[in-house]
Image (cartoon, rainbow, N blue to C red; front, side, top):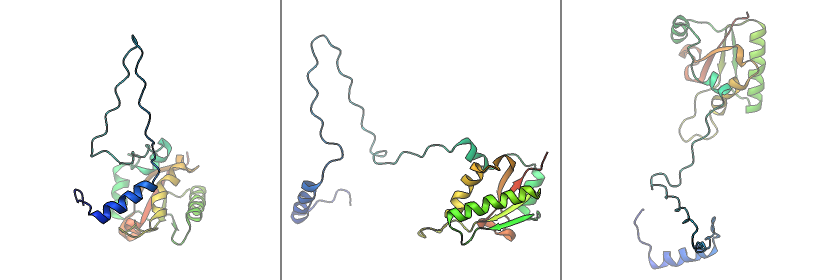
Length: 183
């Protein structure tokens, strides 16, 4: 639609719209002439290139605590990762968060972590559900929040790694939370 000309009826309608709109940034008055002998005013900032105008700035980087559980770190040896990828590791505990609200899922996850750590479990399988399909609003909220919850948890120091589950344990809809042993 860029470059399309408005016909007379559309122009009249557009004039009505613009007459009723209050600008976000009202026109600023022209700056006064500088006094003799004073330094010239700073030039106005350059406008952004067309490709950058109207974009939302990127979100701030995640906190270091939250990113610890979110990104696969090299905290497991190759044998562990290989066994997890092949689905050989049997989870010691499992929690299914389907059907929970966000608050309920968060509370259930905290309780499951506390229980697994108290029982000295090594692998907790967290079933969250698959990531959302394009155009399906409201799905995948628990999956999107789980990394932040694990990173901000009081048990985050006991989490060695978070890995995607093998298809036999839920695949894209589940995660392995590998816990550290007590020392």
